[in-house]
Amino acid sequence: MHITAEKIKEAAEALESTELKSFMFQEPTAGPLTRRRRSSRSTGRSRRSTRGTRRSTRGTRRSTRRSTRGTRRSTRRSTRGTRRSTRRSTRGTRRSTRGTRRSTRGTRRSTRRSTRGTRRSTRGTRRSTRGTRRSTRRSRRSTRRSRRSTRRSRRSTRRSRRSTRRSTRRSRRSTRRSRRSRRSTRRSRRSTRRS
Image 1 (tube, helix red, strand yellow):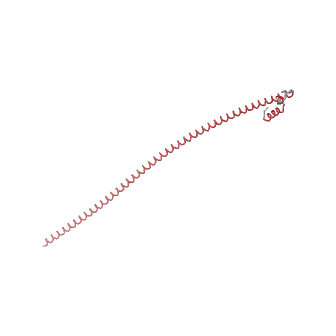
Image 2: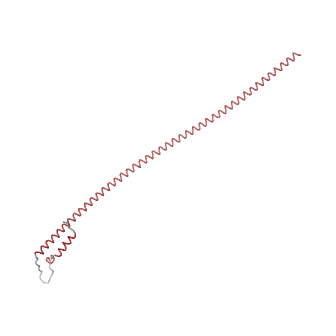
Image 3: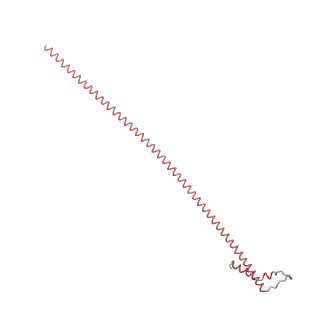
């Protein structure tokens, strides 16, 4: 039997309808206080009504206890669920923060390695460019020296040719002179012989 508010109201109305008040207490009058006799029917009804009210109160108390226990259990379960959810959420956030920290560390390491590699590559390129510049300078100097040497050799060949030409000219002149002198001597001898 479930106790409801309607049943409690019906029991209260039954109590009011009975004549307990008139039997229990008598209004004060000028004469002596006397109690009326209770009929067996009215007393039985009153006892039944009181028992019903007691049962209803007990039922209400039990229902209130059960409701309070249910509310306490529900609150405990809800608090436990919220605590578990908060713990899980905090664990998830901690794991996510750890993952983000690891990812940031990895990105920093990768950026450092990339920057080191770029620095090394730039140093290598600078060294290579310096070496190429030095080699080009040396090649230019060597070409300039070779050109100078070729010019000097050409000048020396020209001078030698000039000197050989001069010597040949001198030798030719000397031979011509010697021939002329011979001719003149021959003529002079001939002339002396004739005379």
